Amino acid sequence: MAENERTPDCENGAALKEAVCIDAMRIYDSCSDKDCLEDLRVLFPASVQPVVDASTNVRVRDVDVISVYIDMQPIPFNRGYYSIDLTFFFDVSLELYGGATVGCERVSGISIFNKKVILYGSEGNVKMFTSESCRDEADLQGNKVLPKATVQVAQPVALSAKLCEHCRCGCEPCCVIPDCIASRYGGAFETVEQKNTVYVTIGLFTIVQIVRNVQMLIPAFDFCIPDKECVTSGDNPCELFRKIDFPTDEFFPPKASDCGCGCGRQN
Image (cartoon, rainbow, N blue to C red):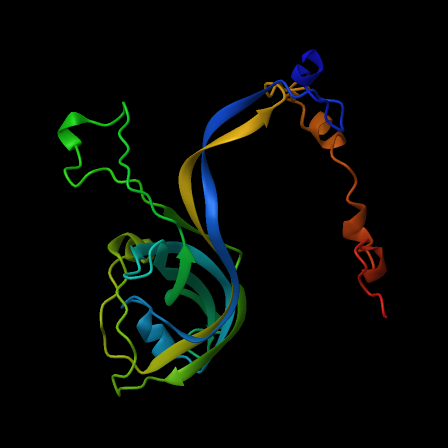
């Protein structure tokens, strides 16, 4: 019986000491998407719209994600599945040409994109209470344990932009910009009479996940003890500069065949 109680050795030589129970967020379902968002309208504050109306051409410089609003609801008659509504808010940096100023004028606006996915998040019928909960803020609806939806977004790719005469047909969807985002641009986005409208095309890479808090039994080898000392830097800037490696790749960019991943190979 003694040989059955021995702790097995791992391939790297580290010994398995014990099995421990941890509280972790487990991914129950996920999906990835590559979206080409064509002709997203760019919204401008009232102070910028006259500059857009006076322009004759536009070029997109950069696109960044300001925030993503996530709303998750269970799907009726399909237990364990959830509908996840994602609202992306993009900061769009543009260059406008042909206006009253000489050369180009840089402006920024907001584009909005809505996306819906359906993922499996399982279901539970328990409530969770912690010692950090305040008695005066008790949730009378019950702290039912629900899964959480998360979204990871890579840096968007700014593909193109175009300047069009504003359509007064009223067929474009109404977009509501939260005050916390509008304040970044100096105030609320007001509905003003406009002559021109800017549309951009954006490449977007996303990963959407549903995670749930669970208790898991995992093997433990040892505590995470740092194996190196902290490196302190002195006040001498030249001493710090000498520790920086020479940027050889900046002067001699690697060829496609040097990337080490089979780039440039032909079958």
